[in-house]
Image (cartoon, rainbow, N blue to C red; front, side, top):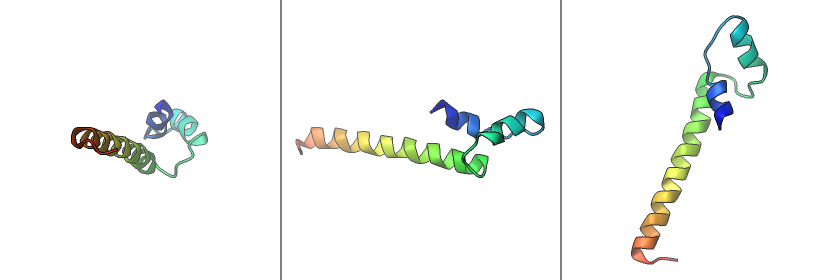
Length: 58
């Protein structure tokens, strides 16, 4: 997970080249969207699990 924050770096110059060298994403925005999708998915799964427990759905 911490790698995604690393990949969202928008640095330029020598330090930015290091970030881009190992980055599997095309841009900082696509790295952000990937982590956002994971967080939203986990949030929805937890909300559904809580709702199912509340209503007794198995």
